[in-house]
Image 1 (tube, rainbow, N blue to C red):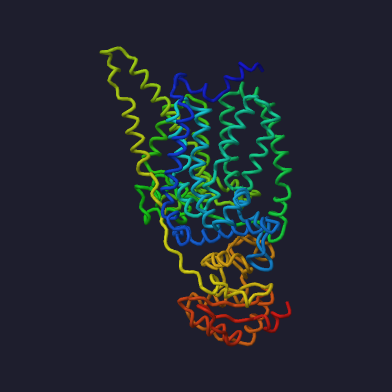
Image 2 (cartoon, rainbow, N blue to C red; image 1 turned 90 degrees about the vertical axis):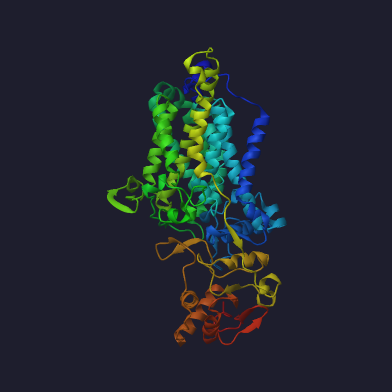
Amino acid sequence: MPVAERQRIDPRALVRGISLRGLRGGRAVDWWVGALFLGLAFWLYKDLWADLDRAYLVNGGQDQNMWEWFFDATADAVRNFRDPLVSDLQNHPLGVNMMANTAMLGLGIPLTPVTLLFGPTTTWALVLTGGLAGTAFAWYRLLARRLVRAKPAAAVGGALCGFAPPIVSHANAHPNFVVLFMIPPIIELLIRLWQGERPIRNGVLLGLSIAFQIFIGEEPLLFAAVGLVVFGIVYALNAPGAARAAARPLGTGLVIGAAVSLVLVAYPLWVQFFGPQHYSTLDHESGNDLAAFTAYASDSLGGDRAGAAVLSEGTTEENAFFGWPLVILAVFLVAWLRRLAVVRAAAVTAAVAALLSLGLDIVVDHDDTGLPGPWRVLNELPLFESILESRFALVCVPAVAVLLALATDRVLDSARSVRAVPEGHPGRGVPVRLVWAAALTMALLPILPTPLDVRDRPPVPKFFADGGWRPYVDDGSVVVVPLPSVGDAAALHWQSVAELGFPLAEGYFVGPWGPDRIGVYGADYSPTSALLGRVAAEGTVPEITEDRRREARADLARWRADVVVLPAHRHRAELADTLTALLGPGRQVADVQVWDVRNVDGAAAR
């Protein structure tokens, strides 16, 4: 196919009516847009940056402790030339499968110097802030290069991609759904392949990009792949001639990309699915309430935290909160720009993603309609059975951004056309830009993100902060009571403050449970862990029998425990009485009680 003819496949050529004169701008515009996105991201995390030693993102549950531990454990593995794909610093001695825990090794490894010099909280804040800004800018660059002529139009689309309510929701706790700046380059390479540009070179680059994204976040890559498949099918049906011409170079590039990425990720994926502490599936059944799409998110200017809570699984999973003005505007734009193949493809992609995100059964404003959701088709398929289906709504974000960018581009071009109308003509006085600015303001102002809430971390026990643990740890684990879990993972932070000088029993991660190796959050609870957890929750000292003492000794041996540590707790007295009945008397060391179990019968025999 001649090069000149292939150029007409460029998606920009489908945007009829957009002037080629456009607002191209220069590098200075890109710098200003990038600075704007970075400033907005920093503003959202301003309270976190204000005190990295104590600030904690309050709406993220225990996830900040977990993610900081991931970064710290990765840096420790790099520093000590150990395998970063697994770690025994949690859940000792079984350990944690880091590849199966979205540890973001693609960022954790290169940011090792930052983690070692400034601590994992700095890395955490840097990844979140840079992720939001970088994602917005990457989409801005893609839209400016491939879809629209006016950079302000691309900036509108990029801003939505980086700071839409569903993205900001995850920004409280899930950096793997914030750091999405590799998705636009992957799309850029697919467009090049579609246009027949250097399929071998671009196929290699595609493979490298996919491999990197796998080490950043596999679940977002799966969502992007599904969205791109839907988009590509609809687009190809609207341009069959172009699709036939693109089939060979695109197919060649995809095969090369798959081969390159497979070479790079084959072993890490083997570790993830077959290595130590792998699991078979992670059960999730959480679809979006259809009413959530027109509601406002907790961290939006027009948001209502209580109202959002009843329509979602939590502040970090508000995946469908676009607000009714933006939904109405998006529907209007689809009707207005429906002649464009890219608009039809974006609209169908958004509709499919939204439907899949509704889950197994369709619920409307808390009312189960009894209608099965299309997610039932994918729910049992490999890979899909482990993802949270409500997150499919994230695919709607770039689809809506495409609509806004195209509409803004067309409005800016129309405004120039209006100015060219002779004096006295009725169209001369039409305030096109003003009308569109008002529409954008009504749709986007209510979903403008607000700074994320932080609180002060509780003080780290002096026993850990000042090195009081050292005389009590040889090469075994520390058992913090109650044991760290999804409900309270502060011990992971204490371990980081102690420079990862000891491993922990149990912890907060995803690992296998039971003979079928079902994925669960936290360790496969032992009898002693469950017992101490009940005391911590209820404040009641149970009857301690000889059988429970034997179970405790067996668990200590299984954990290869050196010391049991009881820090401050609202039921500390009851926990201390329980531990004394199980292990004998402990002793006060600094601000904690400790039980040296290196010589306890069973633990010493490890």
